Length: 425
Image (cartoon, rainbow, N blue to C red):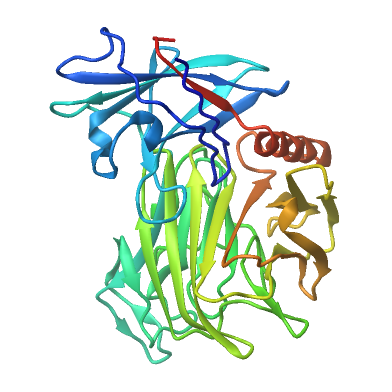
């Protein structure tokens, strides 16, 4: 009997049709290994570059306790590829195996996933993503309250101290960052709570060298620089809510904490705002920012402890052209801006992708091009991306940026289809 599984790529949700439990063919299962086979298919007539494919844990017939990354090996068309277990539904348990592949128009590719029953598999793939928070270790505040001396230590979890103020330099580049080889983002870990962009001139991971005491990320270096002036805006993709006609970010909060997860194909940061004062309501907000290898996209998943009237996100307003796709028949849509709006005075494109069913309306906010999203549940999901002219292979004109927008929209609206099979591909 054939087992069928439909997986959406670039989306946090997947649709899994019932998967029956059948014996593997003799050549696939031994005392040492067990293998599952899948056929993956690009249903679109456009090329997909570095498309993520998520195989649910249920399709691999393993428990939540059997997702040790060192016991799994994935191949695409018989070539070993990097793989990573990820938590897609944001519940704290790994639920899907992620791989990345490129597809020609309407192309099929065979995938095999093998688990070592004894021992471990040697993985040699270089990381393609990184998330970090650098916290000053040692040092003392000077007369202005700015810390000097010591060094920045990368941490995997941290509770922001109540004593932290803007520009006290206890954090590298004033907050935490996440990156792929294409682009890096940071969030100000203070009352600004806004997302900024580090543009890259090299196709590699660079955050370790950004924000050190002997450097200045506001001037162009060999790796790139901070390329966005955010001011009092939403920056790019910052989450907020509209209360009494005013856009309110998570600024007035009782406490903040950060948890970081790194992997070869996906890295994420979970940010908790406890005691967010939103009008007359006080609530907790948990937001996860995830980036995949070779991608400009950041996926945002947020959950509030109480129901909100709405969610708001958007893009800083710099007086350049606004682009949008608000077609009701499109599952995913976008708002975007493009033009000479970087701090290097050259072209920068920024976009927020959202599900059309969530859209209430667009909003011309004082400092931002914004959208208001429904709060039918206590969760929200969207994506944002930035493409800079000076990045390697960067878009240099509006037409190229629109090609990126349309290609990404197709990837969201027409996901890769994966079908499990009972034989080697």
